[in-house]
View (cartoon, rainbow, N blue to C red):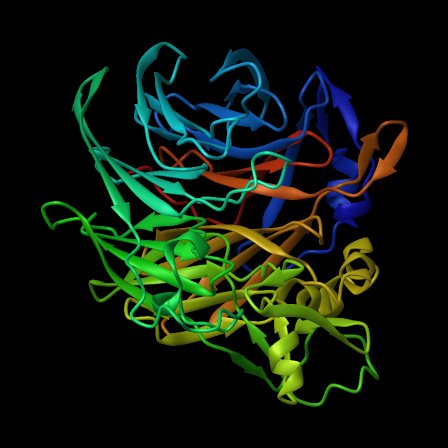
Length: 485
């Protein structure tokens, strides 16, 4: 079984023995294959990864440090660590990286949560280009397809340390760029604030619509541009919503705050048998997001992780038969959990088009019943199950494909997406690894697509692991080869 296969070390890079690959049962259609899995030399956890399609050079954030690590990927999947680049002050830690045609950006929150953070721009080789002040706690970056804009998602996470108890507003920053070959410069910065709610006296709950939530309670998470760069969609995970940004407006503006509502689950789900729950509902609360297009119309795909805290306004996390639920909903007789544990396709207006609920658990139960990931998910069935984190999507001919990282399952899933269905094609369970003398399961967090550059090339996924400190290179097989733009 792929997830349990032993690894060989070749030049510091862990690869699957050919005998193990040959023994992996074949699954018809497109599939995933692990090419290499390489630990960062210091063992630092890895979080967000980005790669330049043209140069095959990339960068990944090192958790709890003030640096990012460079790497290169050969066409055969061999990964080589390059230089380590300090970013920000010694006590600051980059939260995200993004790359576009030779330009790289890294977001750095200020160590004092009462002060705004910054984005540092570099060449893909690590030479400084600019430093741009943005909003509070920048947590995710996304380049437009043409590279002329960089969207910064400022989560505005509250400070909890003594003396820094503050909850700054979430916001967005739009950085305009002039690109001329290898030369780039910043031409402008727009700060987008979330508006004051129309019902400011609304009692805040997990189920409070995004449009009725005060800005300091809004926490944007991930962003993705439409194919024509006219619109961006931004997940607000804790708020169970998506913000829509009009990028053709002058200046750009947040034009809609979509409430994603509740799902009713009537089929299999990740809760243990005999839980006593007959009618299960969930808040999708998406983390990662990717955009697609059908007949020229933009849609977006979300990874519905869920994210409960101890309290949210006057609401709380409650338990029903050991399952984490929304307290106010439980008081009303509804079993409402955090996160759908899968992927959802939405229209640009926020209508739900298709959902794959617990796709990793269901696919493994059907195809890899002995996989260790099944037990991992079962151990977390009361708290978000497999925890979908990041999702990427690409077009292959007339079909759309997507891949997603599932942190608690230690797995990456491959999917086909149509206007009304999300079909699981394959699930790759990543191998366990050593941490502080113990064998631990993987925890994939960041995911990046390296498209095929030619018909003879192969598309790959780069997977950053925040527990094992590994960067894995995964081959997308069976002719489904996304092309570089």
